[in-house]
Amino acid sequence: MRLEGKVAIILGASAEAGTGWAIAKRFAKEGAKVVVGARREDLLLKLADETGGVAQKCDVSKEEDVQAIVQRTLREYGRVDICVNAAALPYGGTIANTPDADMIAAMEVNYFGSVYVVRNVAAAMENGGSIVLFSSMAVTHTMEWVYPYACSKAAVDCLVRYAALEYGPRGIKVNSILPGAIRSEMAAPLYQVSGMEEAYLREIPLGRIGEPDDFAEAALWLCGESFVTGLNLQVSGGNQLTRFPTTAERPAIDGADPTSGA
Image (cartoon, rainbow, N blue to C red; front, side, top):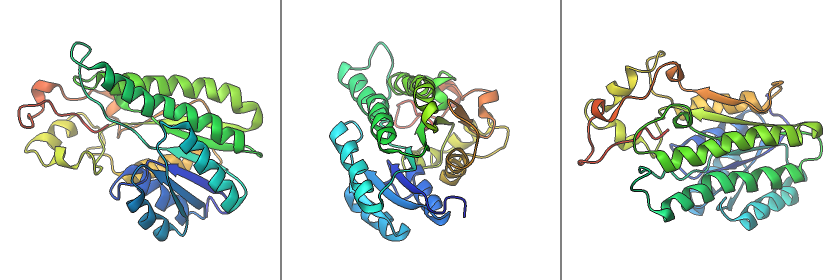
């Protein structure tokens, strides 16, 4: 087992068909002791039961919540080796129409939450470790209607590079994963729209939508013995070589523009 003896905090893990959930299950299968956190505590308890780990409610936009889950991990297991932050708020909109409140909320969860995770988890690590943040392919490939989300995730990728330099001398790796289209709980209704999946598949060389397990595998590699830090890793089936389908190419949902869930 590749993570035998390791202790991992997985954040954003309350959606049973989501990426954080899949990462927690995979890491536990690989031998890690897992502490899971998210804003929805009821589902976390089920995940903790399935992984033999610990659950704690955690809103990453509140630094005191992040500090609390780190301290809980230290009390339960005495160390922190790994943290994956898959928590996110997928706010959509354009520069012209996005309310300030939505821009602020996106930054609070997606960017400030990542800062709180990095500095508090790194402070608790004693013998190196690995931190993985989740970004989005929408950072590198512009897509209509996801401006506030994409810009907050761009800040995450910049944070990764600075954190890799700052914490590298302590043996701590910091990387991010940039998903393309995901078949997650959040995005599931999207692919039920006739013609939607086909629009995305035309731009994905490997010919399928990403599954939560695909991102769990990428996170496992980054958190294992990889000699990698400061990397913004595209995990999109090759979609980074092409583009997202445009608004005109995607079927509308109730008259509104759909997003990929990326």
